[in-house]
Image 1 (cartoon, rainbow, N blue to C red):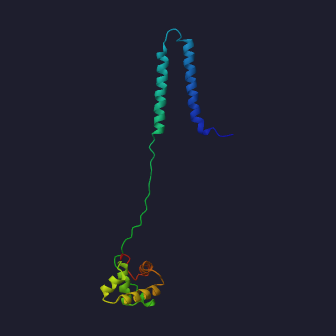
Image 2: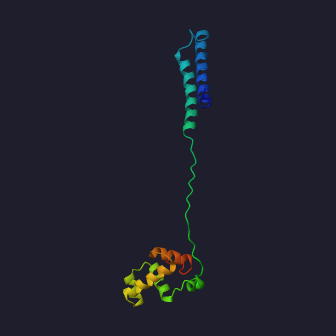
Image 3: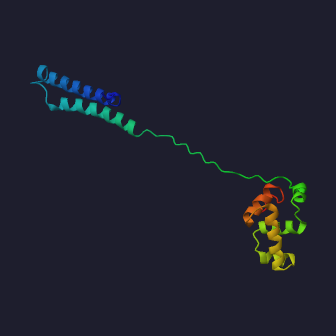
Length: 158
């Protein structure tokens, strides 16, 4: 058998209403049959439903607090960037390749890098290919990310 717990409050109010109606009926037959009009009965009902309406309104209009937690990652720049020379030497990355990598991180195209460094487009492509090989990556974005992790580029360079 199902539990009546969810309906207990409802059943209480039904019982109260029934008892009030019985009380009014008893008053009608015992005391107020000849002397009173319907105004007395209506006033009792009005007072009851006034309090019942106030109670229902407080139950319906309860403000529920809603907490929203927003997590955002905030990257704090390091005070000073120190190039990881041991990693650069271990991977045998030249100073020119490091310059090309830094310009890649700034979002420059191969042609823009070539113009900035006063070298040919093929030279930039060769440096890029060697960098990809030395950093063991396949794309520019991976090369930049790996270089930042290895401290070959400052983390704030984008």
